[in-house]
Amino acid sequence: MFRDIQDFLMQWDQESKATLNLMDQLTNESMKQKVTPDGRSLGYLAWHLVTTLSEMPCRAGLLETDPLENTAMPENVKAMIGYYRTESARVTEAVSGNWKNENLREELDMYGERWKKGMVLMSLVLHQAHHRGQMTVLMRQAGLKVPGVYGPSHEEWAQYGMSPQE
Image (cartoon, helix red, strand yellow):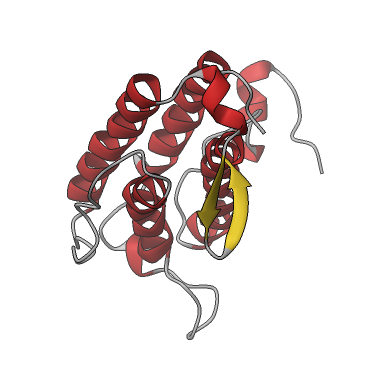
């Protein structure tokens, strides 16, 4: 749980960059990639990350409205990346403009549970990390380059003069 707005904002900047780094590797064709026929597609997961950036802050009272609530998933990955950039910046602006450190211990009704505001911010970060992990599996299946997130990817070890780890 975050207890300091600046700590969240620094982490959010890193997490957003990591997500954009993954999304920049996507192609319009790869957005259809699934693990199983009835599973979520790579495009669905990417769009889910985008829409959560307006849905969750709206539910937490950071945003008055959810502008993406009824917006269909774009078929063009560049459009999706544009939405992500916009909504990620809105999260930064909303948190820095509306919440203070002392607010982070206040509780809200979130999805039928009581969450502290600091947990809402942590959930935004963890939610992205969770789905980025899913996305990397689908990216490999689609034959895309997978960039490292919290360290080098399998393909990036050579750049460090090392053999990839098993």
